[in-house]
Length: 79
Image 1 (spheres, one colour):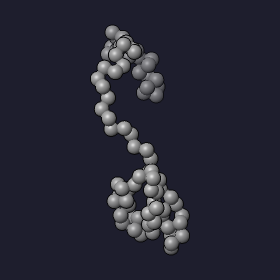
Image 2: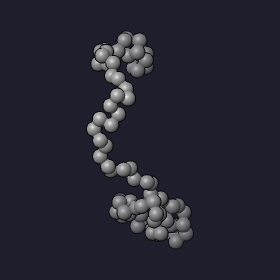
Image 3: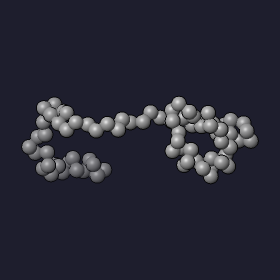
Image 4: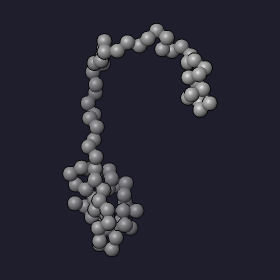
């Protein structure tokens, strides 16, 4: 576990966050007394998705790109 004092965290936080993993948290200390723990999150998969994977699962209607009705536009714009 990495331990940082507040001054070091202010100075080098981006460096430590770049190396942060969910297995090794960062312990933030004030005068060598732990006050917070920063833990990494699971990273998203970087695998490329296959093109056409959901083909046939849904249909885009023919009027998809038509202008929205006035009452729906008003709802989006807060009127």
